[in-house]
Image (cartoon, rainbow over all chains, first blue to last red; front, side, top):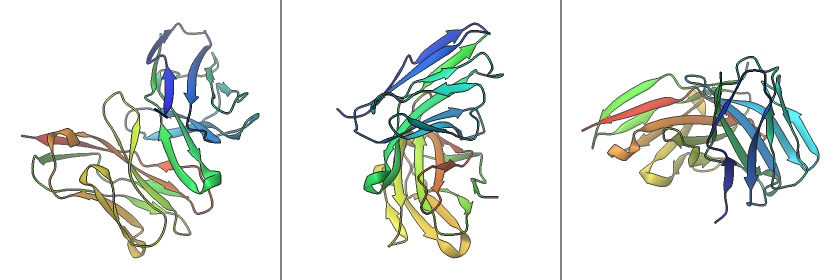
Length: 114
Length: 113
């Protein structure tokens, strides 16, 4: 089945530690995205990537980093510089080159930092 | 500033009753419009989308949405809700020519028996 996988589903870290969230897609989509979701705030874009080896900052990129070394993978690192890292993180992908703007989402990773 | 507004934070509806969720946007040109649904602790699922053409769009799970250019609205409707429709619903907008989505804050739907 085609889709997006995110792992792990739950992640716990101590303050001051960097943590990397995994996102893999087998939809052959060119574009991939990372969102942060907090209660009552909808989804906010962290980073996005249109093609391999290229990515751009979204609205709330501070304290996060990404890489796009393979088309199917777009890992997100939450660094110790992120002031409030506890949140639900969602990865998505789309195929804008084929005129398909709609994004497809993974199941999410809930990160708790204490 | 460009924005997406979902005026209702929470709606409670009886099973079998109709449901309408509101979405308004402020963009210069007609954007691409979407509705997504999210069950607790899950990712988002696309319900329907509007790019152009017929302003009444049919989606999955019995949902439909109507684009009204004059009101800058894209309201979601379902004639008869089921208990399984209890979830959070997000309206999303991609300004014409862009593929990044902007999301509303969401509307939580509770279905009572």
